[in-house]
Length: 520
Ligand code: FAD
Image (cartoon, rainbow, N blue to C red; front, side, top):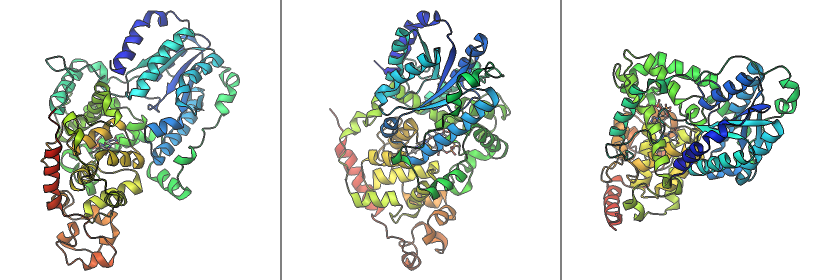
């Protein structure tokens, strides 16, 4: 059985027993990847419960270094998460007299026990959290519902990370969609018929009861722990990331507002051009939950000329359909949890003979493949922890199809580098690019990095920004300085020659995919 279904079954089976539990001395909200107070489903439920019963609300966040390893979390991402926690802790204390306690649990298996130990200590009998859809998290929460009940605690987990809950959309035959377009039609129509799913969750205003600060003084005073040693950045890098990526929900809301006011209406025409700076650059906030996908869709809809999500302005409509991809990949993860286990979504693609060429892999990671658009993309990611979507597709396709390296190596390297790393979206993007995922490109559709470069970075602005060795290469030679240009300018500047020839790679890839397709 799927872990999400098991969790939902346990929640349903225990609902009446849990409902009978009295409130206790405090209510707990357990923050995970939902680091915001605004439009947060579980936080709102917890705040209502606490306010109605006039008991303090206490917030908890669990840092588990083993989770960082299990989820292949990058150092910039850990740093961003901790900075968001600082913001959140400050805001909760100042505006609501609510403490946020960050607990480090070395062994991830001990998380359930530690959460319940704190409930005991704080006299809490109700814990609320939002559901995460990765297998380990779903299994942990299911165990926690049962363990909590034995201790007389009501542990409640609700949907929030997605706009439409996994399982809500099925084909005419009652199956999960594996192709985006019909899934998207169903997603839109579900939201049109259930408009309350886009309503904002508004927690009650007001502060914790008088005396909370004294009673839970040590929680207010406890510092946010530093990042584990293997996830720390150098001081210079940390400073640069702090200015590139300011933390917190207010920043997320301001970014969303600016995007909707200034750029959303031209998103459809500009979104594929990495130099145009035309996308929202909100993935980092969506991935730590300083912003809800629901808020994005609602505000985009409200800026449109129609309430229909698939109508009105082309820019707004297109952006909504892109944010929906995030939901789509989470539905896929919840329904086919084996994608979490390093398996390709499509079994037929599990026997492709990959190259394990470490020099090629290293050149790709370093942005030194001799293909300027690929190198610019990889260097943008190294510098910013972020890469434009078009470039993610080009770089991923180059690794899987041109270099014929195992896509899982690339998937992992992305997670180790991206500040917005999100398992479901990253896995979905890699599956798409390597043609072995859900809703794949057919394997014989292979990106030509030179044509992609000419089409989406026609003036070479993006390349010149991220590959300074090519700053002085003129005209179309920027896309292929050795093939199209005289090559000398690039060579003098130390830019590498192409490590492979695309045309040959294409032939090799077609052959290898064809040979490798399993028919058993
Ligand atoms: P916008 O274009 O403004 O879109 C708004 C939001 O919609 C994004 O923030 C994101 O949450 C969602 N979205 C848009 N496109 C996609 C998509 N194709 N798949 C899923 N969600 C989407 N996105 C991540 O958040 N984390 C990842 O680890 C990640 N890895 C990727 C790996 C590959 C190989 C590929 C091809 C794509 C990956 N994406 C990932 C999806 C996409 O590239 C980023 O979400 C997007 O570039 C973020 O920039 P933005 O916020 O300006 O996006």
